[in-house]
Amino acid sequence: MAGNEPNPAAYGHMPAPPPGGRMPTARPPLARPRAMDLAVRLMQAGGVLALVSVVLTILTRDSIRDQVAERMRKADSSVTQGQIDSAMSVGLAIGIIWGLFVAALWFATAVANGRGQSWARILASVFFTISAVLTILGFFQQSAALSKALGLGALAIGAFAMFCMWRPESTAFYVSRSGRS
Image (cartoon, helix red, strand yellow):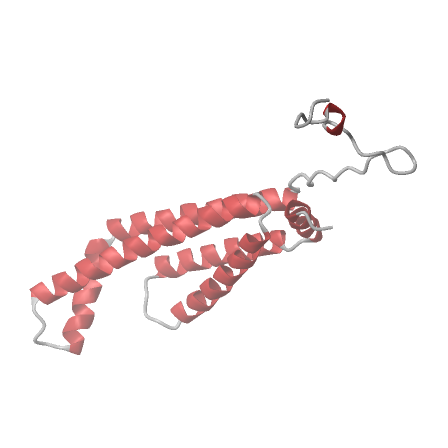
């Protein structure tokens, strides 16, 4: 070979197999277990429930407006209709934005957990804990029965999803997806 030409024998050389003649192979990740399939569907249902809650808030805004007006007038008899309307508009906007945010969280955690991303299971657990505390605190506040029922429904969905995500077969799925043994 001439001075600067590469040595063709140096390329494409495979390492020798270990004793026993077989190359070690990485284990493929486990298929998603049924418990995880159920957890993903439950989280998707939680997202749908959050969207239903937004729609119900919009559909019942007149009754909500009456409740807001009554409470504001009890607190301050000189409150004007303009102040009531402003409070209602701000409250309705916040409620809609919050409901859409919650729905997005449900759907995003469903996707990430369905892929076996361990951080998503921890994040979903934190969200569930916060949701449980807020739902329990909500029972001590004056709110509509429908609102309490939706909160309980979301809490039940979240609790069952948590149960499914922390099952041994689900943990094995997360471990296999993270590449740890």
